[in-house]
Length: 254
Image (tube, rainbow, N blue to C red; front, side, top):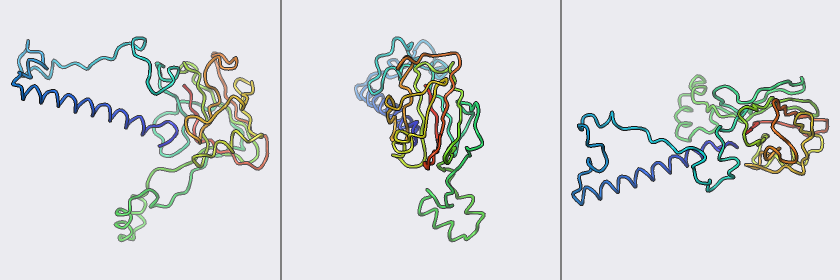
């Protein structure tokens, strides 16, 4: 589902909410079987039943400092007031970019995988549209998903202006295309690929694959190896030469 884990997050929320709903229904059913007045237990009986809907209020979460420690995530990343910011070169992409490009040389170019019309389309739907034998219907059926990125062969520099005001953890991640385990060869083992933060080289010995094998964590957090939050932070990606093609699909910060 991508390095940001959209599907994982949505499935987790759905699982938790549905589990809570089932638990509430079991409790209400037990009350009904025992003869309890569910309206007195579960609703504000100071008003008439017709007004109950208007009396319901959204449950407010406690302040961040009063929340318990995250169970499955590094507290540095899961206890931030802002969600991650991302620049996504894949398709489809909706909304404004969370990270701006400060400058880019002419050696870089945008690219997207040229998929066939039936790519990621179910077998039943594919058969239906094949029987129509109509290019217009093929276009309507085409799945929007397409891997892609900004790429260069041999050389080039691109500079990203990181959204410092939204960064509290100091996490910086870059993802490359295409393949689930491409980051090690394209990034970590590529001596011709250099990353700089405000003109200071980021050492690859401190980097690791995170949160997926197609992504590399360039910086784990502020004050890591002496890096501190500054008023302006520019991330430079420099390709110095060689035969390795570099394709950037995502830039993620937190």
